[in-house]
Length: 140
Ligand SMILES: CC(C)(COP(=O)(O)OP(=O)(O)OC[C@H]1O[C@@H](n2cnc3c(N)ncnc32)[C@H](O)[C@@H]1OP(=O)(O)O)[C@@H](O)C(=O)NCCC(=O)NCCSC(=O)Cc1ccccc1
Image (cartoon, rainbow, N blue to C red; front, side, top):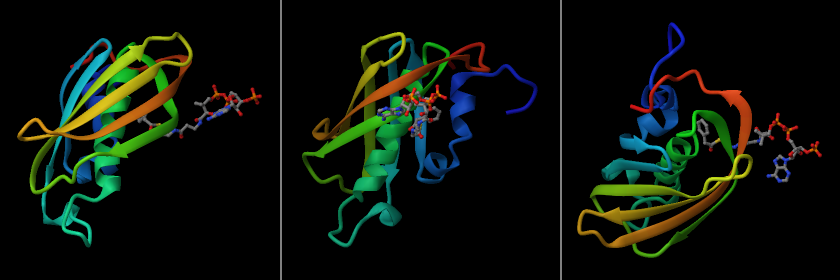
C-alpha cells in the first residue's frame, strides 16, 4: 500500500497467499465480512475434493477482514476448522461474524458454504487486538 490511508479491502490484498489462492473479499462491514474463492483443479487434493488448507485460507482472510473491521490491528491467536462436507469445483463462500467484540480478545465464527448453500465447514478463531490503529480510513 502506498501513500498511507486506504481501505481495509486494499490493505488485505497484500495477503498475497490468499490472493494467489483466488480469495476475494466481497463485503466488509463492522463485525461482518463476506468472501469467496473459486475451487478450481489446482485446489483439489488427491481425493478429488477441495484441499483443507485452501478452505482454511478462505476462512482466514474472512477472519482478518472481520477482526480488523474495528480498524485496530488484530491477529489470530488460535483457529479451529471443522470440515462437514467436501467442496467440489465452483465457488465457496465465507461469512464471518464477530460473535464477541471484545476490545482485546475478539471471537469470530466463519461459515463456509457452497453454491447450493450447503454448509461445508465452520471455522472459529480468537484474535488479539492491538492498540495500534490500522492505516485505513474506510472498510471498502
Ligand atoms: C499480536 C500478538 C498476538 C501480540 O503481540 P504484542 O502485543 O506485541 O504482545 P506479545 O507478543 O508480547 O504478546 C503478549 C502476551 O501474549 C502471549 N501470547 C501471544 N499469543 C498467545 C497465545 N496464542 N496463547 C497464549 N499466550 C499468547 C505472549 O506470549 C505474551 O505473554 P507475556 O506478556 O510475555 O506473558 C503476537 O504475539 C503475535 O503476533 N502472535 C502471532 C499471531 C499470528 O501470527 N497469527 C497468524 C497470522 S494473523 C491472521 O491470521 C489474520 C490476519 C491477516 C492480515 C492482517 C491481520 C490479521
